[in-house]
Structures are given as structure tokens and as C-alpha cells.
Image (cartoon, rainbow, N blue to C red; front, side, top):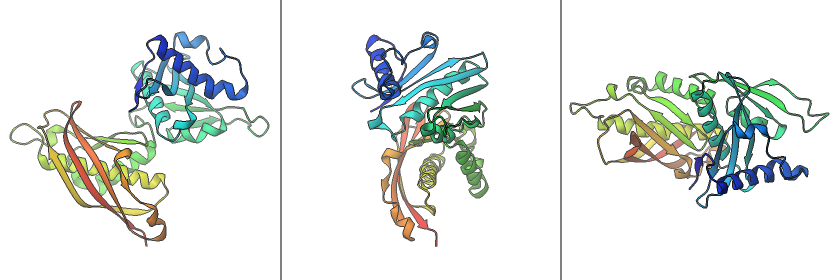
Length: 299
């Protein structure tokens, strides 16, 4: 179990700076202490920790001006790369920047991390000459808007939301929107006022639709991540309702709960995938959906 926290005690700071040094300084034979700078005292720090409290990813935000935030010292433990922890750090730091009133964020990146930041919606504004100087850094920038609040693949999510509203009209009627995508977790929400029953709670059918569409969306995005083509259809689904929904509903599907083999799509064979999602009333999960989806191979 992993969670994002702010370092708040000596043990936190120790594991935080240890990871910074191990990933960002030690490989270049830099001395201890070089993993820190003068902005650490005024910056905003976030880290992903495991159950033992050890840092597996870290990052810092500081402000160059009231409008401009800068993300620096991003590091993920090599043994945990590809698990989505870097995205979680960027998301947490962007939330801080938005809350503090920043209009944009800048990041300096070497070649090996450039693709990651581009996937997070950052634009390349100054390209470094890494042929002559392999350690040179590119500069990226993101203007913070309501449209790019989605941290990972924001362009894909906007396209997906438009597809839903154009091809599944009930999704727009229900007020379903994509809240967040991190590559590992997909979250949607709907408007309670558009889905309310005579008891003042959310229609059971609307809860089912929101839960189903959330799983469908995660699978659709994962197909794009893996450069696979196919049409996603629901073959079977079950939902358990625990309590009524009285607040704005949201649903979450996680990649860790996806089971199935998609590789057959490459040879024109259909694929079957099981997915789960939870629907929340505020912070409390009140419904659980399990669905079997078929991906019809493109022929």
C-alpha cells in the first residue's frame, strides 16, 4: 500500500533525502549534501511511501514568482519505476501550485525523463542541445487551466469525454465528467441533481452506469497506452449497493484490479478483461461494480 505524504519528522526527511541522493546525485559521483539546496526550506515537498514508511518517489515545488511554480528534484526508486508513483508526485505538487494561485509551472528535464513530462501535459518550450551536452536540460511549461487539471494524458481524456458525450448521450445527460487519470487510476464524477430519485438519493441505474463507464474508460485508455486497437463492450456486470448516495457521486477504477490478456488483439483475436470500480458518496465507498468486458479486435 502506497500513499502520498508531506515529510513531517526526522525519519521522513531522512528517507526523502536518501532517495534524492541515491537517484539524482550518487550515479554522477556527487558528494552528500548536493541533493539539497536553499529552496528546500521554502519549498513544498511530497513523497510516496510504502507500508514501511520508506520513500519510493519524491519531488519538490518552489515558487520563482507568485505566478510561477517550479518542480524540481523528482526521483523515483529504480525498483519501483513504472508503477505510477512519479505521476502521483506531479499530481500532488500541481494541486499545491493551483491552491497557491500559480498560473503556470516550469520543469527542467533531461532526455531520459522528457517523455514522462510530455505525457503529463507539459509543453517543450526550450529544447537543449543534448548531442553536444548529454546532461543538458530541456525546459517545459504547463499553464494551469481547468481544462488540463487531469494530470496524465489530458488530451486523451478530453477526447474520451467528447466521445462519450457524442456517442453515449446519457453520459452527458447524467453530467458525467472525467475527474482524474494517473495512468494507474481513473476517476469520474456525475451530477447528483441530474440523477436523483423520489427519495432524494441517486438512482440505482445511474450508479450502475457511472461505475460501468468508469471501467470502460480505464480499459479504453489502457488500450491506447499499449498501442492496441479494439472496441470495448460490456459482456456482464454485477453491482452491490451498500448505502444510498446523497452527495456528488464519483467513481474510481484502478489498474491493479484489471485482469485479462490483451495480447491477442495484435493477431486479430478478441480479448476478455475483468475490471472493478467503486462509487463513492463523499469519501465513503457505497457501491462496488465488477464487470467482464470484451475487446473486439479490429479486422
